[in-house]
Length: 320
Image 1 (cartoon, helix red, strand yellow):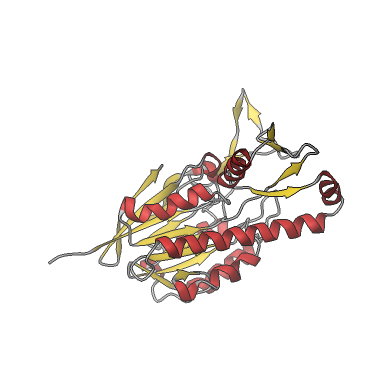
Image 2 (image 1 turned 45 degrees about the vertical axis):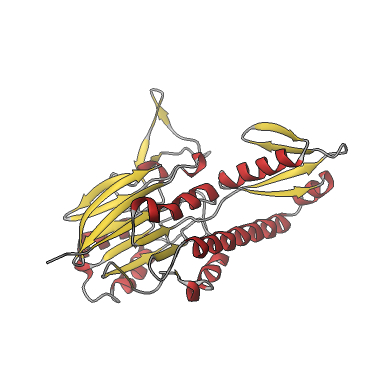
């Protein structure tokens, strides 16, 4: 009897980095996977202007450095560098920059349009490079992502991209539920809820499953009190706390997520959100995993999960 192995590549927290997105797409061939998942925090956080100078050059303040771009090649290279770092570039005059400094609404609109444009570019790239009739392609927002991108992802569903929220998606024959919200953070991101509301929404999702013990829980927030939810402790100015020259870490995950995994004992918990805590842990018999993230360095981190006969049999971490 031949048992077919279904291989999943799970990644998170790409934060606008096109080079990481390209590597994620390349994982299909490199790791020979059947399901490709990018689940949470798809978009970047920063607009970087290329400011036109009187002599025709462009001034860029980026990476704590000052750049003067004098020709098309330098401009193109800088735009790509900004994009690969997860940020968004735009051209402006000094006068336009002064207007933007005084108008937050214009900045927000500029940022929203940049996010939407890149999301479309990425999804176009995905359906061009991946045969979605053969490879399952799952793309999901996270707490840092504006709500405008949800409809963008949904608009590609008829072309093979799967938007997994608010429904059950079978991965390797296993019922999978996905949830993008996290417990409150110091940054007040777009998708945060108090723990009691997280619990209510998770319970509603779990109620859709035939058997939670045989399911996969794909929750962006990691479970509280594990090896995969440790982040630097911050002071009132949001600066890392240090003791003896070393950064102090604390647990920042969700207690509602932890309780759901403890109570229902799914086959595996797939998580992200905390970039510094890539790794593995267990809650009773359920393994919980977080690939971690180094998107700023152009590094793709992922977890490969193997499924045989609708059972998770192996999982390991890869990067590159």
